[in-house]
Image (cartoon, rainbow, N blue to C red; front, side, top):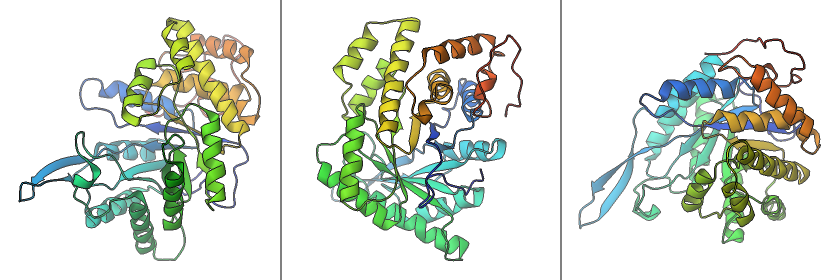
Length: 362
């Protein structure tokens, strides 16, 4: 697949549900080399695309009359290293996250143009969060909402390519769990009107929340695909932190199942919950699954193995025999490289004791 091909572009429904991954720029320090190695392991599974998160740097300005303004500094961002790495070492299509809160319009034009020059042809346009303890209206900037960012991306695209054609996919966020569904759908419709052609959801735990969002969006004239964002449900600590960040509560049954198990039993329960949700989402008509990896390889690789090998992507229930084959594959794999059936996408699990081989990008 080329970097401009898009499995979710209008009028070309993918032949099978897609699997995509979200990656995070490594934190600087001693752990960075290990993180790059994990990113390579995730890229080696040949997902349909990967997205790379982008965290801006805010500064505080004294704005006179005792008011304080917060704005973004336009400086080289760690996300650019991941974008360069993915485009330079793999054929996996890449989606760059962009936020707009706190930015001057001219800075956003510069960043989008820079990413286009690097070869990026997909963007996830987000409002972004203000720094902790700051309200959104305290942040100075010329693009207060995600639909403003979508419009700027489309304007830069038109100027950059100059041929009147669409070269760029613009994705936006959708929120299945919210206190005001009507407003969430209105915002989604505004993003589509501004030029978005794909939505990716934030965290949720119940397939019915996703299905309800899709129905309401459809009634409101939203025709773009809505890709569910799926979190591996194996780390209760992370889910609890996400609850405090997003306000989306961890279901009590899931919390009880994860808090009463340890080791392999805990991983098994978490995987079962994740695969159950994935199966329900695909039954509800989801065009694919976008996995929030948090750069953790093992849960993501387990989930991808089950999705592909257990036939979940083609509508089957999770298969216990596949779990055994996957466990055996991991035991036989070369250290640090994972089993061969994960690399390059869709091969069958190993049956004999041969050592897997295959090219791996570094």
